[in-house]
Image 1 (cartoon, rainbow, N blue to C red):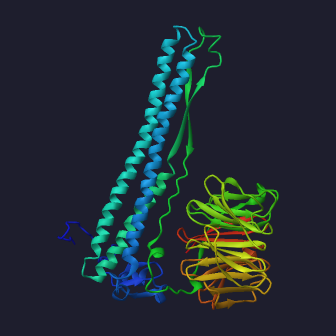
Image 2 (image 1 turned 90 degrees about the vertical axis):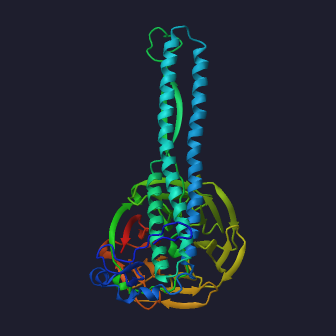
Image 3 (image 1 turned 120 degrees about the vertical axis):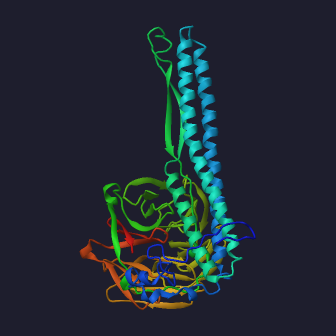
Length: 506
């Protein structure tokens, strides 16, 4: 359709791409509009999550979904601008380094005879060609980013115009379709970022230059050291930006998973006491090793060791604050730090009255388990906002949306409470002993590790139903940290002996 008031064309699909039938239903679990054929061929297991499209689109124009798309687009545009500026600095640095190399060449050239004129010209030509080639590479990437920037601006205009449409169904479908295109553009940018490089250009001077001028064949060699640039890029899902009209409920018995990768920390780290972990936005995992080594261990999702991040004390647990910083608890040291994830520098240290154990961050608030106090809630600056009492045998915590979850490893229970501490449900099961690490998925189902029972359970978000996902026959031995990446739908589990695994949750 086309809005004649603005001339901005908005294409909204009302028929199924695969079957050519009108979209008349909506699957809350997969977050997709479907037709009658889709319902019977692909979504037969989603019966408890299927509603009519008309019902799903109620109040679509006045819901926060449309504003959520705009908010997400604005955030993407802001981050794209930052990427463009960062990449622009690469060309500036190349030019500065080119001048530095030229100066080095001229200083050396001052001491040589006329024979060096030809060699100097040859080297400078090589330098210019090399720098130009790498600047062209960088400019090609900037051009691509600018195109994406322009495309997302265009999508923003279309999104604004959606509010003027009369049909709720069209607004609903348009919102989802524009969101899908925006996600595709952002994923393309993320993939392209892996190829961005920072170049260090220098000269390697021939060591025999001063004594063997008549015998050498070159003035020097232009070297380029390519290093991957870490440019954080976080794009909030529309699911996180909007107020959901329906809370998806799906039996955890339908949850399945696929093995992704496995690796062993003990092959690289001799002193092991794994206590916590978190998954970064780029899919890498940070592992807290509560030993005197005082480092966080970073691995990618194939098990490759990326780096060790030094911290100020023994790291008990770690959580992501945003794309640039993390929070680390230091156990019996009675303090926690916020750390810059790129360079490892400590941003701020916050002392606690008791030992500082499990830690979680949600909605710019940090939730930390402090011995003899309970769950201490603070903002990113360390200002205390609230304290929630809980049992003394609690070491692990997760905060998400409107709930706080923690495990009591002595009483073999998993607790769910409100943000003010009112208990919502308590889960216990004969197959779960000494529960430790846990994580939650997008609809607040809970993954929990049984240390002594040597298994991994998923608990339905009402606390009434559970399913064992992994156990000792699957190779799971005394698991402690469990992490779930809600965007990538990847689950990480690590045992206290250092055996770690990634799984795709279906």
